[in-house]
Amino acid sequence: MDWNLSPTDAIKLQEELSHKLILNPKVKCRLVCGVDVAFDNLSPLSISPSTKAYAVCCSFSVPKLNLIEEVSEIVHINYPYIPGFFAFREGPALLEAIKKLHSDPDLVLFDGHGIAHPRRFGIASHIGYLLNKPTIGCAKTKLIGTYKEPGIREGSWEPLIFEEDIVGAVVRTKEGVKPVFVSPGNLMDVETSVRIVISLARGYRIPEPLRIADIKSRILRNSKLQPRSSVSS
Image 1: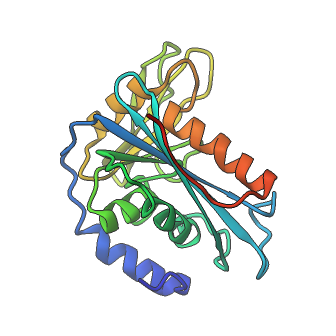
Image 2: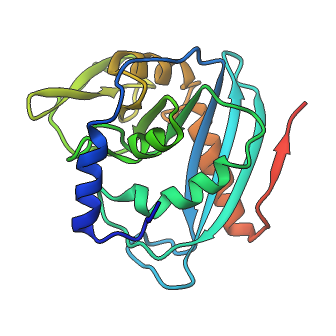
């Protein structure tokens, strides 16, 4: 697909495709892939023709969360940092990395939003639709909606409301830390998304597949290594 759309055309595409999402859970969740992207420029607002995106995908077995496979890809990007359009900035790199996977994950977890998005079509929904796979967005900050602060205990959560609809949840994955913002991407619903994210948060605020993918994407960027593929026995 053409990723270099103007904001006007990107909005039209998001609005059109959002109606094609399936928001019912269809996942056994035996293999979960966390994906993340790091960028050359430390400031997300800066971009130049030489900017590179360092995408990493890490597949984990469930429930033990053993790292089964790690793949990465480096892609030149030219789409600016615009909230609500992260799929157009990060999507090409993530898709190229995901193509390298030998494993077939049951679920892909994104550092971003699903339907908790102004047009109900964040990066987790966009890539989930293109892959026809169950996806969940798990973001560190809110993009849209209102909510009550969840309880302080690990596993507490409250619905995220936007235009009178429940579009996600605000989830306390660890006692004493800020909550994360969870929303279904595709082939998923809110309650199942919350349950899965809580089950994957092993003592950290960020679910383990995303936490490791984030670490490895920054290592790749900082080391300037070549993209890689590896499978654990």
